Amino acid sequence: MALNLEQKKSIVAEVAAVAAKAHSAVAAEYRGLSVVAMTALRSEGRKTGVYVRVVKNTLARRAVEGTDFACMQDGLVGPLILAFSKEEPGAAARLMQDFAKANDKMVIKLVSFGGKMLAPGDIDRLSKMPTREQALSMLMGVLQAPITKLVRTLAEPNAKMVRTFAALRDKKQAA
Image (cartoon, rainbow, N blue to C red; front, side, top):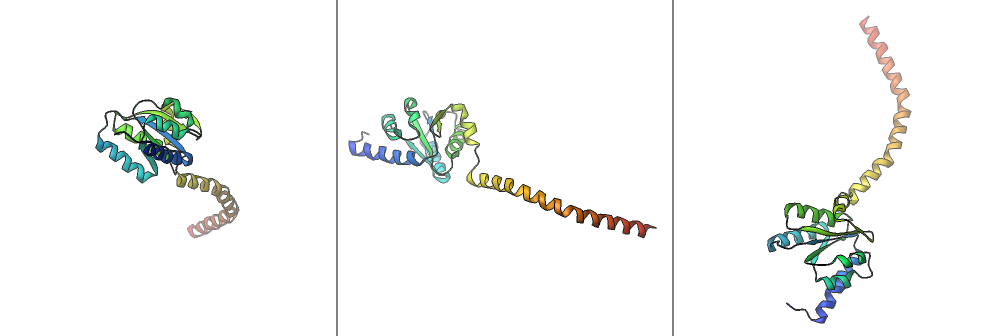
């Protein structure tokens, strides 16, 4: 179906707005995937906060122009589906990598993060980035460790004295 100029402008504006706010982007070749599989991918993307869209390459090039994902312009060739992480940097990578494992016809072609182009093999590193909740819990653990150690150190002399008195009591009761 041919698109008129207004439809093309609206698609470019929509993708450009998402790309301007996105943390990372993944482009994959979807040749040979069924409609049911693509619908499942889009549905999973909505659940995880990932914008998934099939866009003509010329429109995608115009949409990413002037964003952190301009480095992807040269690689936008062939039938590609674009996925942008809107909430968490690794969300699009996780979604596309999991889907590619389940569907061997999907091939990851482009990965971009922080304005830099990554090799398609680096999607594994990007997908293993912690979510916001995981990162906060790791930070809290790091912040809590010195305080916990201080409390244990301050409590140890009293605990040692109590253990000593208990040992003396047990020795006297045994005699």
